[in-house]
Length: 538
Image 1 (cartoon, rainbow, N blue to C red):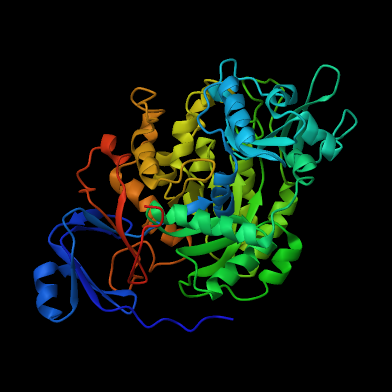
Image 2 (cartoon, rainbow, N blue to C red; image 1 turned 135 degrees about the horizontal axis):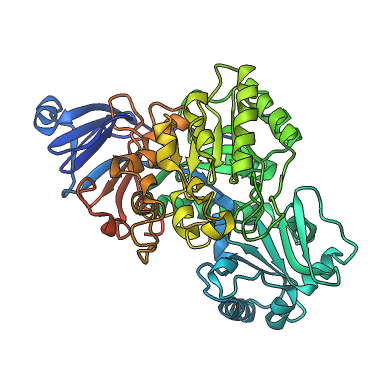
């Protein structure tokens, strides 16, 4: 049962900070401006002196300098997985196999009994860059089953006990859209790619509703602590959907959630028959998430030509393109938004082609999205804009992957990687996210990555393919106006009269701050629907 709506928040006039005003074309920090909030919306914006005279008696909030922004929008995250990280072995940033094993062992000793689960390893950071094996994981897990998910979520490292529980052996066949790595004798090594991960994961004890609800709340609070007032949650299953609605009814959602359903025909049938919400609700179903290919790091991204560092390997179709096209067409006709995971250049070309066909049957639909769009042939990057397809990108992927991307693609194709400037030149809309928990959700890391295409250590010198760098205004737009437009919400992610009063204040002049200082920024204050919200976890 829904709780009664709370009384409207008091009218406010907020002064003292620069206002970041962006209409999608020109952005600037307006010094000496203020905004008025009434009934959860921005009622007026303009010169502070004039507004103060016109709004006598209205409660005033005086900020000590800094910048007032629209509330940031996380354009692509996995909320429950982010919230579950605290209960797993954290393998992010490990520089060697030995370091990863040491962390697994320490976690197992602190948490006796049951499965050992972890996430975040990346063999490309390790000497030799070889995939790990079950035997290596056995050395620190004993007889307990253990599974460690790769940083991108597209490969699973299982130990011998986990494979035994799952019945995985030399005769096990990989499912469509998956791969089982094998040794010279044909036995599984413990490394499972994309769809093959489910061979083991389906044998794990499933978390109950209470645990899943706690994970969702934890994930949202983490995002809120970083300055996000809204998130596009990609790949929500039936139970998570039910839990979100329960939390909404209890008034417990700390930020807005735009849910993209998992590609489940039964779930789509039940959910897409209703009309998509027209307002900016605290929770709503926005669309459906589809997978075309895997990830570049595990060589599952589908390429037009074989991998330069593994001749003969083109990558995977995680889902048959015909099934994705059918699902995308159904989603568009129902008035919802398809979001298609495509990383390799073949997958991006396929996504463009099938979405172009699907949109002919639903010409007035929401703009479809291609998620990640990492490796894109120049002629295809130029098609996003004319076709009205959103490029949903995560800038931190570029700065995490720059050191090994050239080896995967070779010198003739490396220019296809992360073509952000090329998207803009073709008129495409950019929507920014982090893909958390694949990457750190901190949006200021994302902004620094977009501007410099360098990692926190300043590598590579000059940036990775620096011709594709974005400006400060373009980068901030990706987390604000761009995401609002991508969601079909012209009143979200922008400071203007009539917009939703989702606001974020940072104690820094964002228009002047050098890129080297961006990663040090932290949110200061936040408002959602005109009500100030505590920054959870701060």
